[in-house]
Image 1 (cartoon, rainbow, N blue to C red):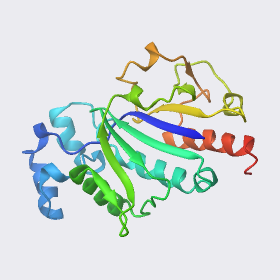
Image 2 (cartoon, rainbow, N blue to C red; image 1 turned 45 degrees about the horizontal axis):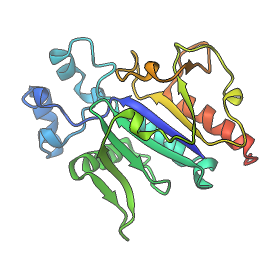
Image 3 (cartoon, helix red, strand yellow; image 1 turned 90 degrees about the horizontal axis):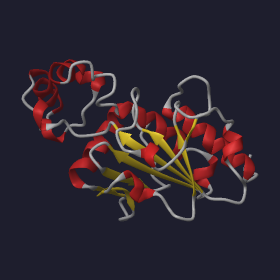
Length: 222
């Protein structure tokens, strides 16, 4: 089993300090939504973010990261074989659990609507009542299982091949950052030694794919 835990993710509803921003209100009116029920998205709200949090629009409000990531992970052979678990820990200490049967919309706008519904209701279910996603409160280290080998991935760590980090006979908890720039805000380095899989920074979904592919190889799934 490979458990991917995405930590300190920049995924949240529009924070209270931005609810009265004119750009946020305009988007809410166009979408016929309450500002407080929209996901913060720097693709459309970067001006509002930079007015309140100068220079932060490249990091804050990045649901697009998770649209790419989940399309990669949910369609993987490893997931289809029931050997992949995805959890997203947000910077506000919420944890999103994603069932392996959850299908991610190809349309980004539909994905935003799905995630907004999840954040408002706390749970998403299929028509037959199966829980596809749900949200709990919790710290990043609540996700780690004692019997899993833990691997923290960060550009700060020494360089390793992804294939060298995965062994056929073990279960793995892979910890990655859920942000596009900067570093972890949670104290991950106090508990785990970081490893890096490439000499340059990679996108989250690329790193996830490298680890998934390595596990598929050692499990003889490819």
